[in-house]
Image (cartoon, helix red, strand yellow):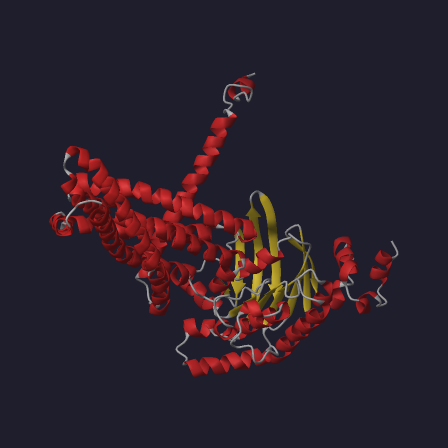
Length: 259
Length: 279
């Protein structure tokens, strides 16, 4: 569905992405892992068209999007929902206005129709009765849920998650992970989750990719990933993977654990 | 041998002095900022005429810029007029032309101080607030969120603010001008032995359509400059700028707006008086 081909991006002389290739198949939840500053969020912003890559191509359902004009790009963006690291809710609006923003901007729905969709989407993320609250009145987890409801409002084909569990307590993290899994099962959307939280990664992924020094160094299903003999990947997995993964009879992981 | 002589020696001959290098870097930075600001300005002009037209956003900004600034603009104008009246009378009396104080107050307020005082008030009040609001939105990724949702941030955020400032600054200037003349009248009539009817008659005689036109042209230009600088400084902050970046951008916005107003005032004076010959 989304194909990232040979993408490079340089910031102030530093190569953040260095010929990155990545395939995101339709209906899968791909988790992109990597150390802080390795270019995970930059990749997400390039896919969303917020940052232009220096070179390379992004293909979305057979269309090369990196050179699309702004009008066509805006139409394409209506197929993409994005949950930002900070939720990025509009603080001058209520929760309902935030969730209804895209509907208000791009459709002719009446207030009642929009209100109905807002209620539906908020119910989907297990939030009710918060429609008239302001973002400042919500907890971190609630803000992420509202951000997700807003991302879902236009029934996107792809959802991009930028560090969905960062800054949340363990219980809320688990709830958000469950929510991402539920949405994937219920809506069959293609998802790209950028995270360095291994609990979250193994909890939601149907596919995983590891980025290091601007390139993809590992790609596969979670089972395949823990069997790849790559010291950088295994070190990353060992530091944060959930106990059930580490307790598996996996010779490669055991070898690294015993070092 | 040949190769050695063809290569410029790094030692001494082509070395740029560190001060010149830092001036060059600073100049490059300033010019690129001016270029980016003008790009945003032209993008805004294009977006004004592109549908959809969101009048609700414009009305909200008109109220914010206009109605909320009305009191402070009137008070500033009134006291500026009073000061002008007192100073004018004191300066003109030794030459026995204190009767011209109405002309002095009226011409100064209409052509110069009315639009200028209003622009200064709005640069501090509205320009800085636009920058603070937009830069906070940038830092908290709200502007990225707008773009991801297929909404052009220039159209949604800049156009209503630009139009509101361009419309409300001349409107507020009318109020501050009347307040200024009223201030001059009150000061001169109550503090000195100037006849009120005579003052008003003199003021009326010296109030030309050309002068009012100059005032409104200046005010509209100042309004555009305040909005353009405010929006540019808000947009130009990097996402990693944080609270410090918002503070720096806001201060920078107020300072640049004030300097831009003064430069623009000089340029407009030259064009309107010297080139077009307006009085």
